[in-house]
Length: 244
Image (cartoon, rainbow, N blue to C red):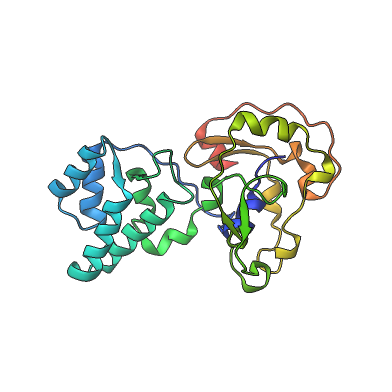
């Protein structure tokens, strides 16, 4: 099993079709320039923040304060929208291990606010889930019926931070049988997100990195009988990945 584009579509309601965006890391000077251009902040003020973060990053708190300044004082609503959306994705689908910083390289995604919806967000957000493994993880029901109301399926759950370490999970995963797994957990969610055949695409995807996307290795998740898959292909050039 693996995370597939259909899981991301149902859990987060992110599009599985759209433009590719592969970010290029920025220095703290370049991040300050982006903040001046797209967030309406003064360059020197933004530079102090990126120097404090030791690279091309903003803290989530700084982005929130930028949003508040733009809404309440500068009345720059386009800048406020960019700050808010960058903070939102920076603490959810694009979160890093710091849990407090947001990489400035993602700010360019919001330079044209009218085009934000055109990007292939699902390929950036290939994240793991608990839906297929009902006996794993710490969660509680939120009380929202997301299959009827149109909410992303992930809003069904209220997640709690667990104390189980990876080494403890490995024997639990090894002991799972096919009957312990929900192979197709989103069939009741099809009224909100119909199944899209593009999720059966086989090849490589580019987001924050290049990942192999090989549904033939987990075909049971699509309701088919698993066969012995061919060896995974070598990653082609970036231009070939986008063209594919």
